[in-house]
Image (tube, rainbow, N blue to C red; front, top):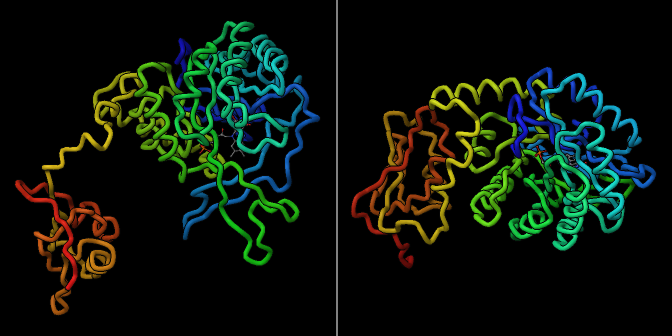
Length: 405
Ligand SMILES: Cc1cc2nc3c(=O)[nH]c(=O)nc-3n(C[C@H](O)[C@H](O)[C@H](O)COP(=O)(O)O)c2cc1C
């Protein structure tokens, strides 16, 4: 990416998982191919992390489908971080270090960029996107003020030779706009996404949103599997923007090799992750490398870059759909276990095309009435192979629900 080679496309993203050389080195040993190092600032006295700084979002029995945080940039001394970066480059020369930086003035951006390059960083990542900085007018506030994105990128561009990534906020309507300003300023690539502004849980006894920082909550950064659709969308939108035409680092909810392949197919060249590492540890990357390799072998790809953007020709505005082609949910009743969930969901939320045969404990479908919403297949417990699949029906007219009598 941007002329820099990565041993694997998996990187730690800038966050607590990339906070020290020791953590990063262990991640490299497990198969991470690079790091976006935790965001550096000039004056660490400005940075005090709220306590506690994270809250979980569990859904049913599934833990950490999301993670809420109010963490700031690094609170370690700048010189310690620069020494750590130097050490990493000496010990792991083939593993690129992308140093994330955030200035609180133009001079600070310039100073941080020069120092990071001098320490041996392979690339810079400009943090225009932290959504909950306690230092006024920084992070996402800069990313939402497009002139500043261009101005600070240009200031950094003037003083370093290494490639520059601009890390974008998803807390915006059209991400291609600030990305184009970053390009105008001289960015070589874009990273997306930083965390999505959200609220996960509210205490039911004290009514305080979590994390509960001594009686106060805040709308703040949300990450993890729940944000993957948002990250994927922003990557695809930038990849489809011809005017932008910059390499992309994908981030947001990547926790499996399938997530990784999807980001590559939508146009990301490298992949960054945090919440997956918080949840599962560094070893998560071993399965991801293996899964990606198996996928590539099966499909006949030699290089990761050959997969990049392969889904984009199939991604269209909805106006492009061929509405003359219609279909139905097809039932293989030999596999039915008689639970009746399809009947209930179709009756309560679908096209009401099923009757229930209580004697045989089987659904009876009126194919004419099926609207092919497919919600029955989403809740059917029979999978692998699934009992309910989509089937195109030639010359089927779209179903328009009639007025009930
Ligand atoms: C606790 C925490 C701290 C983070 N700190 C930073 C940071 O200092 N700089 C930055 O650019 N992004 C930061 N991020 C955002 C992540 O790098 C990443 O963009 C986001 O979490 C989405 O990826 P994920 O779903 O894999 O976690 C942080 C995320 C978390 C959860």
